[in-house]
Amino acid sequence: MSKPKDPNALPEAIESVEQLEELLSRPPREVVELFGRLKGPLAIVGGGGKIGPSLVKMACRARDAAKADVEIIVVDLFPDPAVKDDLAAAGATAVACDLLDPEAVKALPGAADVIYMVGMKFGTSGNPSLTWAINAIPPAHVARRYADARIVAFSTGCVYALTPADSNGSVETDPLEPPGEYANACVARERILEFYALRNQTPLMNVRLNYAVEMRYGVLVDVAQDIAAGRPVDVTMGFFNVLWQGDVNAAFLRLLEHAACPPAAINLTGPEKLSIREVARQMGEVMGRKATFTGAEADTALLSDAGKALALLGRPSVPADTVIPWVARWIASGGETLGKPTHFQERDGKY
View 1 (spheres, rainbow, N blue to C red):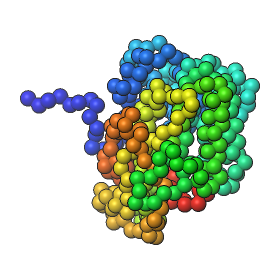
View 2 (view 1 turned 90 degrees about the vertical axis):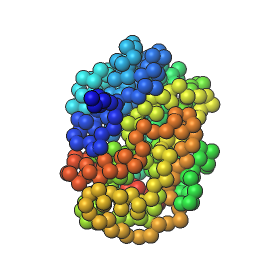
View 3 (view 1 turned 45 degrees about the horizontal axis):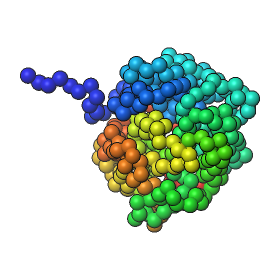
View 4 (view 1 turned 60 degrees about the horizontal axis):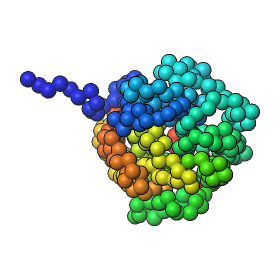
């Protein structure tokens, strides 16, 4: 008699958006247990963007599995009303708010815990003032509104300078001296949150993420799309880190219990240092296409050392060698994408 299938087992391939979104929002045991300890409410500010919806849904699923009485509030401008409706249907309280408006932020409902996800990257070169406004003004408003909460804030590994390609990457104590306006606006976001955290004794964790990946966007999608289109893969930025977005979601929720004052920072990425050239070769084999290349690997790359996060949270549930063929098969079969390339090849910080 065959054993019943494990409902939590990872599939060989992801075949639909519905299957993907279920995986991205599936809460691990540690997150369900967390919701048994949270006092609530939990506010997810900027939760209507690229990563936010699956994180909101994971939080709702974990709360329901824990039978916890925790309101989950998702705050965003919600330019697409369908996103707001979708998150409300998942069990969140969806609140539309212009986060550049201090009076609107003051009127937001209270929360004991906050995950801060507001940011702008693409279009920086063409509109740097808007990039600085989005990345540097709302943090002040939100930090003042939630002075009594614990805050876990999205940041980026782009706050570091490039590191030697043969190293493990930047560590949290390295100086924040990145190239480009986007990355410097992200340093401003961290520093403003830190300023108010220190002034108000607010527990804070700045989480330096690079790069979240799933089937519809990310470095792996960019590489697979080049192969599918017969374009050469640029290997100048020769090495990189990735982390499955479901593990990103779980980490941000779990890090609520590690926010501290004085504020803390942590790198969040996978434990593997991946080679663009080798990943492209693997994807080409899965896709039945031969990868071609342009450029040569530089002696520096944007890399982060995730040792601190690994010690605190453990290893990711979905390793890179699982995600790589998932993405290759998805792109080869014409799967849906978000049309948002990462521009990971950029070495001067101009996005």
